[in-house]
Length: 162
Image 1: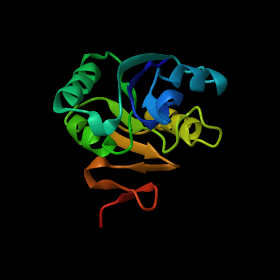
Image 2: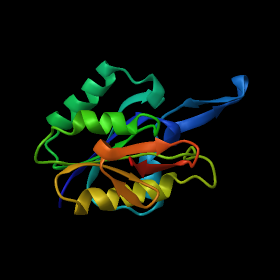
Image 3: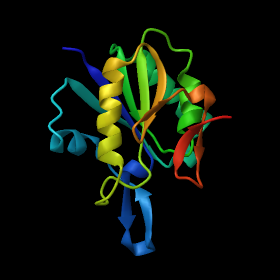
């Protein structure tokens, strides 16, 4: 059975409501819970690399993500990431050979009832097992090439650049 290495970096998918300040903060990853609740039995390993909003990711953070992917013996890599700079990280990973790398996240925290998190994770989990080697963004039922993609904040979705 093929191992899927799952790296979590934070982002909206892992945000929790922090009542004392009436705002959201990145908390512990929800990935293991999402996979268990949705009966995912494919062999996988979840590693939390960081707990950051993607707007706070630095060049050093992206280098750490790159290094973790390069160090993994797995051919299939799934990365959960904040949506604001997911494309930027995808571009950083573009030179990695012989791996299928899929980035996903959510527009609503996984802990919120109507979140897109579980669907996006499931969709990305299937994509990482079926796509050819390369780097992809899997969001809301679509697969994107980070080199020609951007987040359309007004529409609340990802689109290809014109």
